[in-house]
Length: 482
Length: 82
Image 1 (cartoon, each protein chain N blue to C red):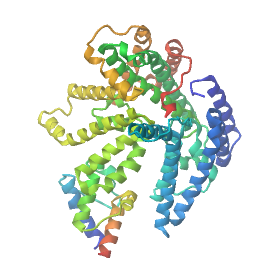
Image 2 (image 1 turned 180 degrees about the vertical axis):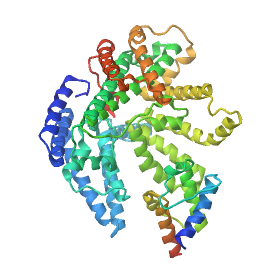
Image 3 (image 1 turned 135 degrees about the horizontal axis):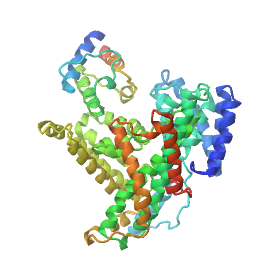
Image 4 (image 1 turned 120 degrees about the vertical axis):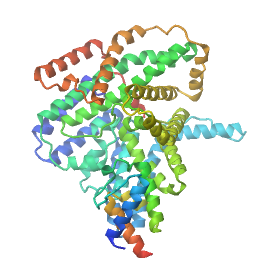
């Protein structure tokens, strides 16, 4: 059930009205929210619901046990935390990577002429598993680090894990910010209601007017790369990065907006990544809830552990960090190399940081707009290149796609490209106008205009625009597969 | 070692590592208060502090620090054990 569908809004209305109207205490609201979340998740994947309930119970108990022993028996508390992390990774590994691992091992054994199993395992990956397991693991680590106290209310904890707007595709919330909100009654607020709906509307615009309009064309190019020239491949790389951003940011905006309507703030996921001037800054602005999670629980412990290696410790931790981000997306060598590619870019960015600052000081480039935009363009290009690797079905396909570039430029693949020119390009222009204005703190975002009539008119205009230019047959989101 | 003495010494270490003329730390200071204190310099600070006081922090206690005061607690504990 996708957010931009009639079914979802019927479901949401049924949840929302009693949530504010009948439940006057937080306990009732949380229980109602939990029931709705389990129904929502069961609707998507009912076979996995018992697993979700069981692991929620286990991690709830682990949280309490870790806190009990944190001071009296610190070793036991560490072991219990390890149990939680191993369990979380184990579930992820089984559903997400085990089939791939067995296939790769069989291929390796076959290459050496050793006996091997040629049967393919058909393990179906449950939707949202990468998101809720990360919430669970983050919770026990935070309890162990004493950054939070575990909740004693099992319903509150289960609601945090299964919260329906975010369970399928994030943002990955933290217990430290989400649980305290469940600890008090939510009252209907007109501003949360309208601001939340505006974010949903903006998310719909991104998804339906950009991502879904572009996707048939990029699918046609990457699915049939052998028949395309350099011009088409390069344009497809740029468009695919835009598609990826608007698809996932669109989903995140809708999830954040739906939560806000219910009086709950969830983590932000994007912060105008195309305005980033280098790769490090881009990663701080892209899929923020995942990158901060991995920074806190993978990068920092590794960096601290390797601190006596000096710069090299930092470089190793950076590379591992990005490889983990890469393979988090799935069991495919393309994601591994995507992580290596970005890890190396990030290491280079860190290593060149001081010389760059010296260069900028010497040439007084700090406030030079032309210089800033060249850096943005370079960063965008590096990410567009990486997105081809991300999009390719295999490393073989990626190399095949790249091999088309030396064949030379030529006419652009024009089948359905007129749809993009007519419908997507104006929408992309609106997106960039909004991002640019927000970056430079100029409020030309009409949805938030001071005058009421401008606001209402803009909202009406955006709805009409989505209805007229948008792809209304709700398509699935790219990040659902992760 | 007195807390005040530790903080004084930390002021010097922070100024040196972060390349600042002067640093005035308090127990409540966090990385948000000093622009130059990022994840890279954080690690450099830890190594410099360990070298200066001739101590070794555990990874878990480093992760638990929420401000300079908690770092001082660790230094105080470790130097008193030495």
